[in-house]
Image 1 (cartoon, rainbow, N blue to C red):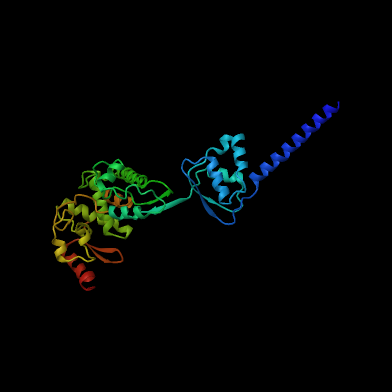
Image 2 (cartoon, rainbow, N blue to C red):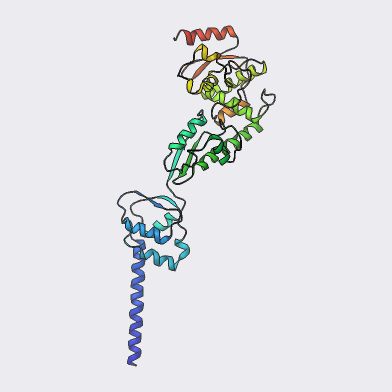
Length: 334
């Protein structure tokens, strides 16, 4: 009987110790962590739970790593889904919430805004200096970059959709190029499928080229359709488009901020004062509104326009009206 009482007492003690230990373990996981202000913690790609909790302990975010290792043994599916990336840790977070966060999609994200009207060169520059990206394309030639994103021998100008793109640390810049390229391809396909009939352009690529001219010509959204209408009528009559942005694009690094008469006469493949019809490639990245304008030009009888300030234009039906407008808005201003 005495032995039985001793054994019973040992069992009671063991159970009590187990209960106390279990409660202590749970308390460790449920107590607020030592986070006094918001901070960023990164889970490296391929890191094990042991590595992550050791890093957390070393940074003083958690008091000890053993409760998490015990949790991993008891509930492996609950803690083995850690995701690589940066996470924003905030005061009041407890251990269980921490693991849930590090296993979630709530990675810290960054944004890259690509404005409408940018060139491919401007896009590459922006991506090359974007923080937290893996810059895999920085030393690539244009041809190699287009091959890397699966675009084959496409000319890059105009092929990327201007928008704001989100990404997280460690993402390859190739993925950003791919997303912007795919977005433009899808948008262009949708717009071209719903085009007006009887347009003086015969392919989606020509629509892309025309949209880039419209994008670069006006900063006033309500003018896009009218600009497109002028270009449509000029193309139908075989008139040269005579749009300054094509001259600037053709000059490249030789453009010094102003256009001279000699510049307007300088032969380049893009100079629409010299060539008839559309240039061989887009001159910028058009947004959806410019694409829509290119395939839904505004009806009218104007054939000319001149900048009158603040990104707006004066439209004219005849050359005489246009010359008068030029004197009014350009020559008098000079």
